[in-house]
Image 1 (cartoon, rainbow, N blue to C red):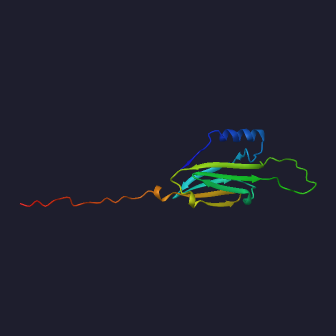
Image 2 (cartoon, helix red, strand yellow):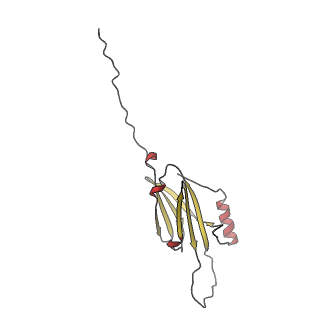
Length: 144
């Protein structure tokens, strides 16, 4: 189970997109994500096109998962005159609160085609399990 941490994050994202501002380390731009459960794990996918995998930082402190990344301008060499630049640059960040039913120790990360995918296993204590019903012989023999 995942919980949103900031109800105003989407409003901030739209404002930054409208004003065309770039994220900084003190005020990063939020990155879009998808999250879903499949079997015994949660999967979170972050859109980070054009970001070097070495510029991605993933931290977990207690139950707070933080992903930060930085996209820098491309260096094309001398004599290049940019005509249009719409792709956002700067620092991107997203925090996700993990519930106690997830195991942060087992998180794995993959980066492919501009998408960072985190897989978080469900904790053993949170997995459904069958409870066996025992029976006891509580009948007592009545002696005459």
